[in-house]
Image (tube, rainbow, N blue to C red; front, side, top):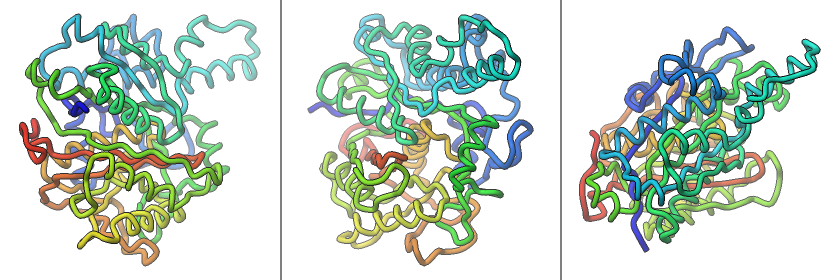
Length: 407
C-alpha cells in the first residue's frame, strides 16, 4: 500500500486567516472565546472578516461565508505545498470537504426574507450558495481540480471522516492527491438558540477536562490539507509536513446524542492498528475535548482504556478551548494543529484550565505548552449520532524518510 503524506495546510479560524495565526494562539493557550455583536452568549468567531480582503468580487459575491473560508484555507494549503499541481496531476486529484451545516447563513437569510419580510421571490443564488458541496465545488473550480469533488457530512466528525476517506483512497490508488478538510460558519441567532436548547453551551468559556467546565462554545472556521501519496510528493518536490498513517472509524449504534466510551476507544485502537503502531509509541492525543461534563469524562476513560497497556499515558490537550467547537471543521482544524505540534516538537496546552477533574484522570497539559518530541500523535473527533473518528499522524522522518517541513 502507498504511504500518504501531508504536504500543505491551510486554516481560517477565530485567530484569523492562516495556520501561523492559529498555531500562535493554540500553542500559547491564548483563548479566542468572547462575546459577539450578533448572537447571544460567547462564541469564537473571525471578528471583522471581510471577504473582499481575500477574494475577488466575482467569487465572494456568489458564495456563502462557509465557502469563502474554505477557499481561503485551500489557497494556503496549496501555496504551502511547493510547486503548483500540473494539469495532469489536477486531473487525478480530489476535493473532499466536510461540513455539518453547509451554507447555513445564506439559507437562514432566505427564510427571514420569506417568513419575516414577506417577500415572494428569492435571489437565484440561494441554492448554489447554500448547498452542502458548494465549498468543494468552488475549490475545484478555483484551482482546476478535475478529479472527484464532493462533500461529507457526519456532524462534528465530518472533516475527520473526509480526511480518513481521502487517506484510504490515496493509499489504495484511487487518486494521487486530495485537497481535503472541512468548514462550518454556523454562528447565527437561530443556531445558537438551537444549541442552547440542548443545555450544552457554556455561559463563559470552554474548559476541557477541567473542574468547573460548563459546556462547549461554538466557533467557526475552515481547515484544508493537501494529502498526497509519497511518490507523487517526492517527484514534484513538495514539502512534507508529516505522514497520515492510520484511520479508525466506528459507530456506537446506541444513542443520537449520548457518548459511548467503547466506541471512542475502538476508533483510537483501529487507527493505531491501521498504522501498525502500538500504544506506547503515541506521545500526544489532540482530544475532541468539548468542555462538556459527559463528553470529557467519557473521552478520558476511552484514552485510559486504549493506553492501559502502555508504560505511560500520552499527553492530551484540546484546541477547542482556544478556537471553540468549529463543528464540521473541527476534525480538519485539529488535524492541522496535530501536524504542527509534530513539526514544532511542541505539545499545545489546554487553555482555560482551572484544576484536575478526578473523573478524567489524564494529563491535559494545563495552560502552558510543553517542549516535547512527538513521533506519533492521534487526533480525535466524536459526533452526535454516535460517530467516532481517530486519525494517526507521525513524524515522517521517524518513519525513515525525509524530515518535517516546518518548525
